[in-house]
Image 1: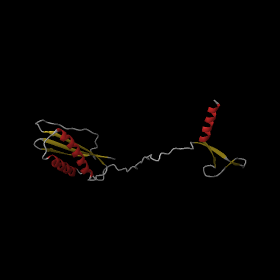
Image 2: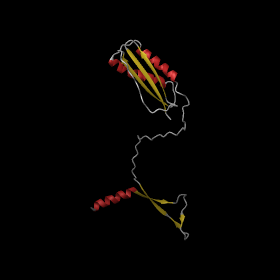
Image 3: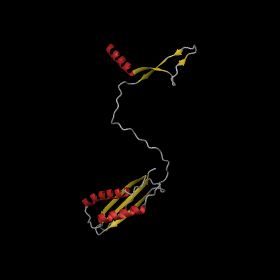
Length: 176
């Protein structure tokens, strides 16, 4: 039992460091009798601190207090991109299930890259593409989201050939 108490006291001595304190401005305090008073502060801490060199510091961004965009999202330019991409990728194609699954992802990536090339600051871009077979059916596509009517917008384009249809929509949500 006494060994356990000795280990505890040795660990406590390792953690406790006594440092003479000279006050907050480097001036020694005086007692009322005129003698100089030395104070000793006790600081608790570990001598062997472990620092991880690979740890990343969190970067905090300052507020810009910008409530609206400097540059509005160019809906006509994005509609032209949608028209160009859908027409070039789907013009001569026949509908196949596996092909349309892969092509939907490809078209989304191409549209997103071309819209990002416009370099419109502070807008989050969401791209949706639907490809389906034309067999005389009807289809309704709808979406819901939290929307700021003053700054958020979208562009959409529909394409149709003899065997398939394609609908592409780009949502631009302003990021304050």
